Length: 135
Image (cartoon, rainbow, N blue to C red; front, side, top):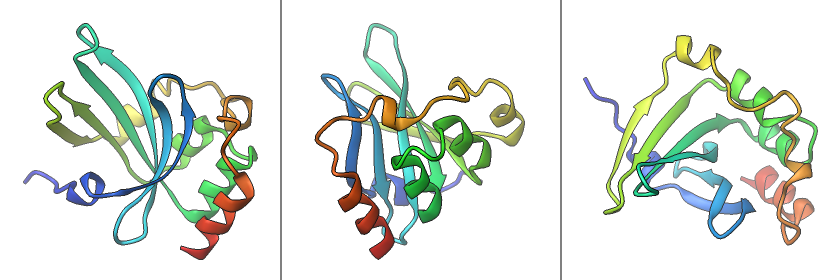
């Protein structure tokens, strides 16, 4: 049976954390209150298909990530759920849970992948922490 990822499709953008002509890392929240780091992974072929990694994080992990106390690598290693979204150029997406065996090999981010090194300067970290705490 195919999993239903409609909660991810309908999630709300909390903040774009890293952008450069487009978003690279965002924090989103589902209707049931789950937080996800959404990370751009790749585009194939010729920029017509985008691959996104959805990393479920609890509120404490989200706060630790946005304040630079936890790396993206650590978030991925500790995530209870990783989902790959393949977004077509027509806007349609396919979704698949990444199996644990695949999670453990090939984490593409280095152990020192801290957001504070690359976060957009207009992100108000204090306000973001407050928002996560109030969720």
